[in-house]
Image (cartoon, rainbow, N blue to C red; front, side):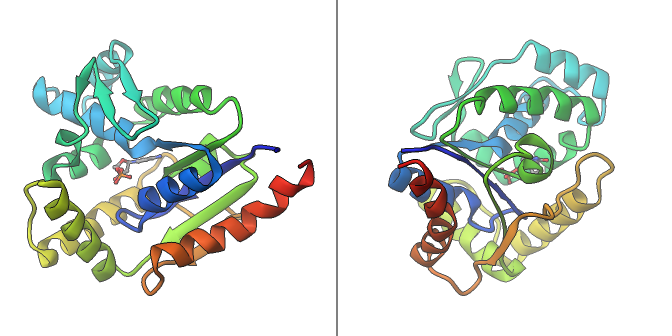
Length: 224
Ligand code: DC
């Protein structure tokens, strides 16, 4: 069966990773969570007291940094399992901060494009449809209200045993991070012209998966 690449962009906690994982199991595809790479970069900066706006030092550090995303969703930073550590609230804003740096983006985008050279990937992030995989066959721009996103992030944090702020504080943090991600100079978050927008606020996971599957199906059948 023919394989394609699927790009999912959108603001934080819109459900991108959850949906990408479900779709991957359904299609036998591999999920690449690009946000995890910015989070690893931020975590290493925080651990090594490298200022998040010192582009030269952050890039030099990154050149010497190994980030591995495993097919079962684990994240390894220089050989250490940081799957949980990168999800802490403090790392979220730091990730958004380092993602503003042009040369950090260049380095990570090059790695992401190399990872998805073959087809059969679902990549989620902020610039996948607009920069990383401009030729992805299916592009989704996933949104949800700030409150719905804060409630989901709160639930996820609790379930994963990650220290969390309350829903109201999370909503404020999410909005501040979205604003920063949408207004940065380099590759700001925006909907690709050819992306399909899905507001997930009032949809179940299955409903969102089904909608995307309907967009993917014609490509699978093309050369089946
Ligand atoms: O998807 P996430 O919340 O784990 O991403 C963390 C931060 O990384 C996000 O605030 C912006 C940045 N990011 C980005 O700039 N480009 C991507 N493709 C993915 C994430």
